[in-house]
Image (cartoon, rainbow over all chains, first blue to last red; front, side, top):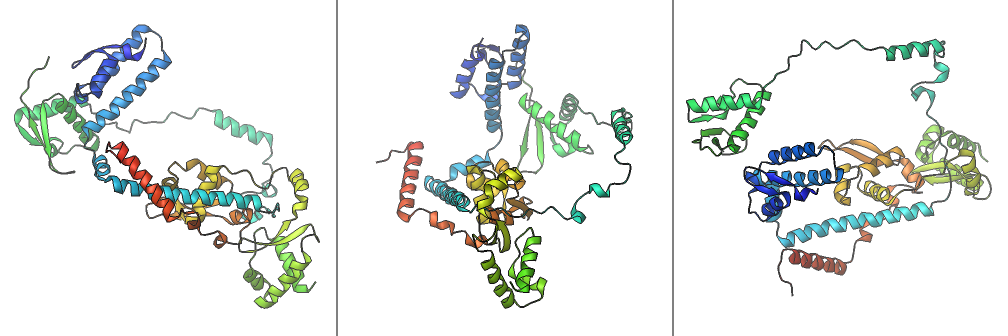
Length: 248
Length: 193
C-alpha cells in the first residue's frame, strides 16, 4: 500500500494522506492545527497492524513527514532570515549572485592554471629526509630492554580483556521532571491568578525545569488553555489563562 | 670547484627543505656576494645533463633534485609516484588557499558554493596545506606549505599570476548581469520585453 493511500483519522482531518497533503498545500487545512505527532502515531499503528516493514513506503513517509515538520516549524517561528531575503530587491539579488559567480569563476580558472603548472613541472624528485631522532616520538633503538617480551604483550592484553569494575553512579542525582508535572504546575498557578509572569512560574527552578516548563507552556498554548505575551526577545513573558472551551 | 662551492653542495645534500642564499651565507659565515658566486659555480657543475642530480631554485631557496631522466627508475625503486592526482575540487580548494591565505574552511565553502571539508582534509593529508592559527571567529585558518611550491615548481607565492586576469571583460560581465536580471524577473513573474 502506498503512503498516499493511507487513511488517517485526526482531530482536524479524516481521509487519505495525499488528500491531507493537497489540502495543506492549498492552505485549506491550517498545518498549525494538524498534530503531526498524531500522524506519526497512526502510521506506527498501521505498520504494526501490517506486521512487516515496507522500506520504500516507510522512506517515503519519513520524507513527507520531515517536509511537513519543517514547514510547520517555519509557520510557527517568526522567520527573520526569510524576511531579510525577501527584502532584497531583485537588482540587489542579481548583483550579489553576480559577485559570487565572478569570485567562484576566478578561482576555478586559477585552479586550471595550477593544473597546468602541475603538468608543466619537470619530473624531478626532492629529498625526503625523515625527522631527526630528537623530534621523533619514539625510536626502536631507545626502547627499554624487555619490551619485546611476549609475556608483556599477554599481560597487556589480559588487562584489556578483564571487565572493568562497574562505575558507581550512586552519588549522581538525575533530576527528573516531566512535561505533565509542569503542565499541572502551570494549571495550578493559573487557577490562582489569571495572569502571571513566567519568571514567577519557574522561580528557584534549575535550568532543566525551566526548559521543561517552557515545553509545558507550549503544550498548554497548543491546547488553547493559555496565551502569552513577550514584547522583545529575552523579555518578560506574561502568561494569561484562557477560558476553557472543551473541543471534543 | 672552490671550497665554498663544495661546502654549499654538502649543505644542500644534508637539507631536506630548500635553503635560501641568506641561510647559506649565515651557515658558512661569508658575504652574500661570495655565496652567490659559489652558487653560480654550483649551477654550472649541476647543469642539466652533467649529473644525475640537479640544483633547483624553488620555494624560496636552493635544493637538490633528481634528474627527470631517473624518474622511471626512481618510481620503481621508491614504489610511488612523485605526487598523486588532484581532483578538480582539490585543485579549486588549493587555488583559493594559495591566493587568499590564510583562509578558513567556511570562506572556501562560501566561494565554491559547496562544502569544502573533504578536499581540505585531503590537501592536509598530502601536506600541500597546513593549519595556521585561527580567525577572529575561531575557525581554523589554512596556508599552503613549501611542498606546494615544490610540487608546482614555484619560487614563491608571488610567482602565481594575478587572479584578476581570469575575470571576464566588462562587456561579458554586463551580459551576465543582464541574463541574471532577466532570470530573476522571469522567476518573480514580471513580464520581460
